[in-house]
Length: 203
Image 1 (tube, rainbow, N blue to C red):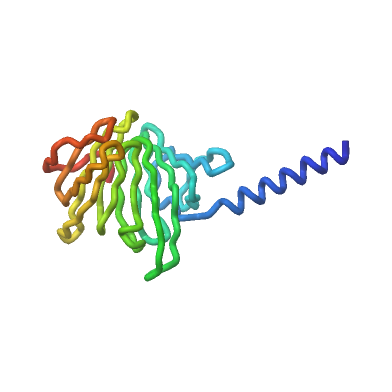
Image 2: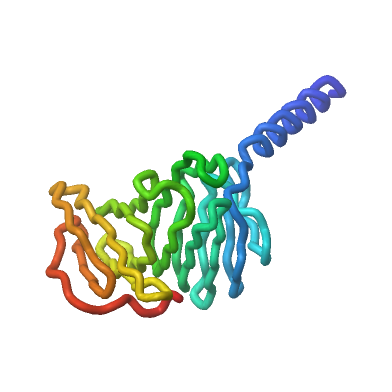
């Protein structure tokens, strides 16, 4: 029995060490309206508190009346509205002026993304049906359970104009969207016409 107990303790210690080693912080919860939770890889869900570390490959989710802002190490910011879910799939940041890579996968909900210092061609947002690439950008996304949704592009604080590039995973079609514009796409990633406007509900 003692040998078995020691084996169990040793296995638990190894598991805990492995989980801790994989718990790589990529930013923090910089603003929060409870409730929001984080499910870390090989771990359990936990309620997020202000300034809690956000872990790479963790799934983040907000409640029906929740909201969460994540500030990443490179200064990029991602705001989640109510009843939203995403995963930070990939994040590498080597410091100001260095290289890096950022990939975030939206599952559903309302999102606002503000780019940081990672080279823009190394930043992308994945949805079930559309991939979004950026160029010095503030943009919003609304995503439904079936993978359909909308994207709109903000102007900068001083009137700067930005672009995003949307690629349909089904058809391969690429659309360029500019500040002040909005576009929808269906559950197959087929784009609708570009209109003027912005997505409301996520600041």
